[in-house]
Length: 202
Image (cartoon, rainbow, N blue to C red; front, side):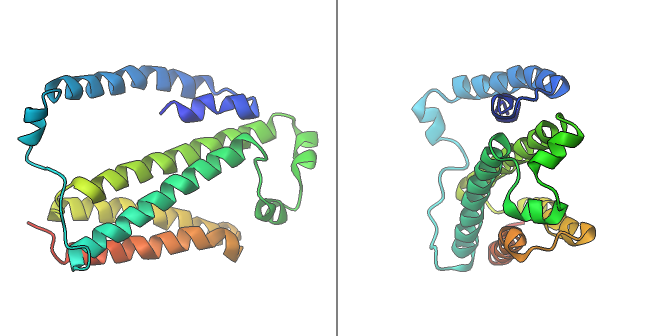
């Protein structure tokens, strides 16, 4: 939650509204975590929880689905951290420069605030992707694959990967190397849902 606002240390642009929203939400998040921690500080209480870590046959449908989703989650975490790092440092990858037709120096000449603004959005996007990967990893590793959970995963996957993939041809940014991670992640995510959905409980 605090990573994107603090990433301004790398690119020099601090979004006051973003920072204020983070300062408002961070206590709520910490309070919720604290309540959970105090309710479960007794190890015996943890053992009585209805959703203990699942032990699955990984070569069957549900196990394979979870394994693929875990792989996608790890890719999202790594990709999100990479995007944030790019936003904090060089801001643009070579494919971006080729698509724009201008480099960082030309954009700075137009307006010196333009590159930091783009860097801010890129770093924030990377942080969001990383957070989604962490959540997906927790769900794939521990949660019972109910029909409602499968439907929720399908909906967020369609929204997230659909936007990530189809926005590029819509604006003419069709570099195959740049699109490969998003397309590959979407295919693997769909495969993971396919296998996991075969044994989803009602």
